[in-house]
Image (cartoon, rainbow, N blue to C red; front, side, top):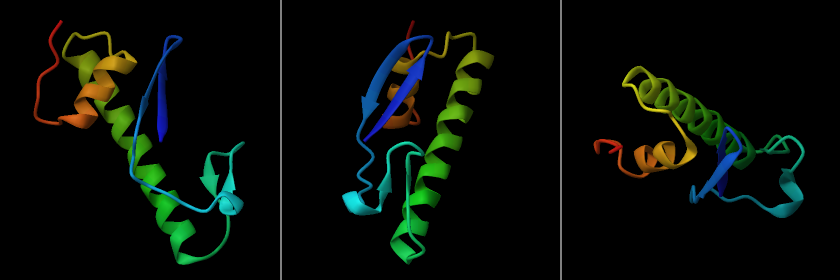
Length: 84
């Protein structure tokens, strides 16, 4: 699960990405360890963050506020246009 927060408004989205509790650092929001799964989880997190930032910038360029709700909708349906 990931939480997207913009201007104090947060929305949660399920990422379908999992790791063992003992291999998770909640302060850093990343998997610990040097095994393949930890690297894959952290790469997924990096890609997800980059996608969120890209969507935020795209929404702002299109004249939208770029709030957490709009970002979540774009993540769920990339081809769909956000309505205001």
